[in-house]
Length: 229
Image (cartoon, rainbow, N blue to C red; front, side, top):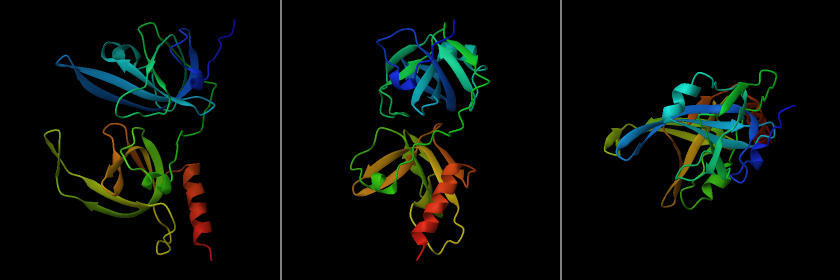
């Protein structure tokens, strides 16, 4: 009897027996304080063939069970897991729910399945600038790197951080003949008065410069068309 694979878009708590086939787009470790104790967490963003995405989490006591089975970029068949609401101040995906691994969760490599799509959900400059409050979902963005500078030290949660500022534009800049293309993955939209910016999230956000992917080619083609007389 063949295993029935469920689409990520249909995942909900209203059913217990789910089986999904999905690619691990990103995987990272995090920690939170619960009852004055530090709890480590392992997070992933999963994407299926229909390009639906969902976040999955492995709690502290199960990390050692699954950490060596999970590999970023590979496709797995995952079965027998819990489904919980996708809440919190920072949401990596727009899915209403997220997956929580159990001790009985099955993870099997799907070696014959390939999902080449990098899973980017690009947001335009206009969409970013239209925001009037902080946006709870993380977004991806592609643009031209125009400047790099350091800002003064910033205090965050009692720690002094050195902030690096990337000046990025999304439309034509004729003075740059071969501009470096930057892709920002999983960034948070921050609104401070009338100023809107993108801010990284520790352990999640990634910056790629001139990455070898179709999104870079598409953006360069857009620049050529935009700058054409």
